[in-house]
Image 1 (cartoon, rainbow, N blue to C red):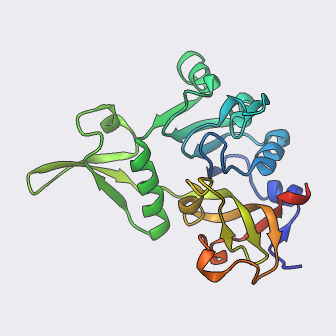
Image 2 (image 1 turned 90 degrees about the horizontal axis):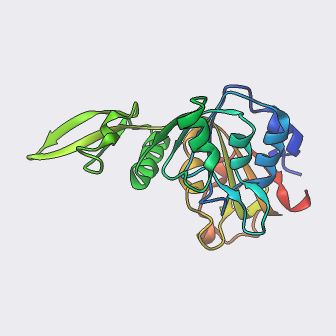
Length: 230
């Protein structure tokens, strides 16, 4: 077995208190559910989450706290950087009522580009999105730039301590193939963290995925959890 393959417990042990975690998924679609659930049970705290959303209070099969909503509900998160949190009421309660959670909302396309820039080693992203809005008040906005007479915002590139990603089929080197729309934020998140842990729905041997079908190279993946056997 390739030495990238580790147990679920080993994966969670690698994530310390206070970690900044980037994750894939769109309302839980394409999220690493087993790793997230184990992290929720671990009691790890003071986490910063960077992703499209915070999962959902109720999952597609009626389950409670779908995806990273588990972490928010457990008060394990100190800050959220996301684009949409309306499906997780705990974010509003903790952020606006209890004042125990810092919530930074970023336009979706900007967030994707900020993560991509972080993975590419760039310092930021210039975008016209958000000019003249509360986006300019975000700690992740570095100010305005005027280019050829047009106003842009300079948005900070984003990186993380850990990225938790997921794919339908992953080989033992970490090459990833995504089914349907599950690639979403997984693709950029896998490039922008110091430690990248992939949860494989189906773990296969190297060569089982045609080279032209590899979306995320195993070169980005440090460790793999075989989610299909959990």
